[in-house]
Length: 259
Image: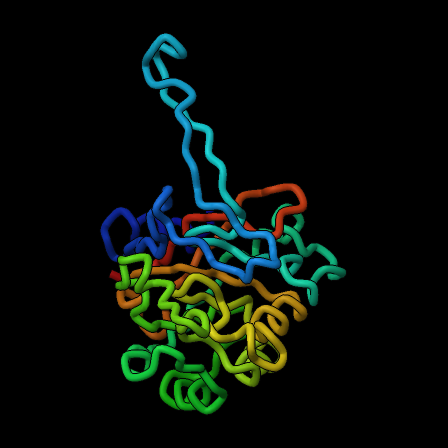
């Protein structure tokens, strides 16, 4: 075994490296994204017991679950968006697994989002972060810390009114900078999707999805506990289920952080 892996095992055992869970609980009450009625909706999660130590199975408990791939804390593969549909290795079962692991760059915009729930991250915010913490490295997971995961009430989490949902996200220019100039692995957010709530009306619509997935990049949504991560130095592990031809998957996102 290499010395680096031996050191990691020892650091985990002694608490010098902590494991932080960035995943929301997943159940029937988990909010799902809403779309206009002309489009097919994603169903809420349902759980049906197969057996629970009863006549259907006296010594075992298990369930049948039914849910959309993009429910709760979930992974977006490039094939999820039309811009990424023709790329090679673009599904959850064909993506190279080394792409699921990478350094985390956490950009804290909680104060901005507190003032404006429709806040958009722009290139100047990224450049200001880099002036303090260094250039975002290729292969990084860029995580947008907004405090949105503290909205445990589903209505407040969706935050919709007559003109649709209001939640923070990325300006198209920021997505282009991250995907094309920084060559990140992908982005992660605390909101229900990687685009802002009002992004359906942007030009282009849903620009983060279109730009990121068109460049073969990945997405993580409905994260939590980003306030437990430093701006740099953590490692994120975000491995989706290996669904054949899958566009995404619920998953358990973990971060390794110096204790």
